[in-house]
Length: 171
Image (cartoon, rainbow, N blue to C red):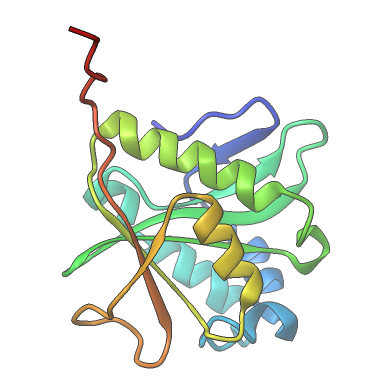
């Protein structure tokens, strides 16, 4: 099961996605905010894809996101379970930055999180990445202190678990 959106298609990683991952991580404009290193070639990226077991282990992960209208891969958006909680993240190809795809994909993922009752989420970003700060705040994340295992020096946010309580009626 994956998030749903009228304009976007979400899917788990599968064989052959090494090309997407290699190209995405080969762009220094993308990696400047991640702390990750590029893959040396498509084969190394494909080996990473083949070893990615997050969906099998947790029922969710970092979904690839495609534009429904033409099947174009935008990047990935989703979740990663760590020792200290569930982390929300996304990574787009540079050509799709600042076009609203992150907001739309993020809202779809968060609606899925709420439907699954996964609870509180965390997110982090490089302190100079103002676009990520704006995006996370627009999705309902709030600044908080670092948690054990978080990246030192990065800004940390949390999103509380969705409340299913109904508003109280008038007496």
